[in-house]
Image 1 (cartoon, rainbow, N blue to C red):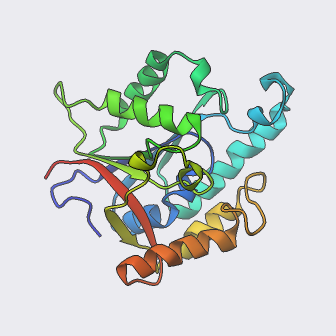
Image 2 (image 1 turned 60 degrees about the vertical axis):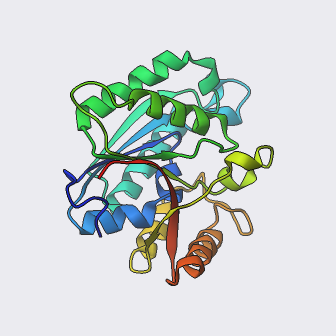
Length: 234
């Protein structure tokens, strides 16, 4: 497959939490890797710590295990690099937006991607929305380098759960056939032992297969992942 025939084939995924980079586009990543794209991933948040009353209450060994799970998962789908930025889980709004933008800018300058995949702007999760805002602010079309494509992915258990703003809901206009790569997505998600849930939770393996099958019915394939293009320069 090709995102852009003139692309430099550098793709950057900027995700808020460990597992978002698989939930939203694990099958697509494997497909791009098979077509010789170089895919790097930035995980802005540390994960887990919002499940305790205080960040410091989360044992460090649990956070290290989550990082290990992320790297195992990345190896399955083919991410070349994974960066951990360790912002407070589900507390991005406690950090100055400018500081988040600077973190994102540093990664964009490092990898110089032609394409960035990130969260949708109307996701229920506050960290997802701030991630989108930081990405689009960082990637304003000024200076010597401009990222051509900014594409939002769907994050099951967040994108579909925001009912308050129907005007900005997820409106996919790009569908990628993952019939040959859905196995990699599900195997990668299986690495996340603290994040995977039982059906009918959207983060269960069965639900992820159903979601991919549903998008497949929209475009006539067995399985697909859906995206909303924010900007595309051809």
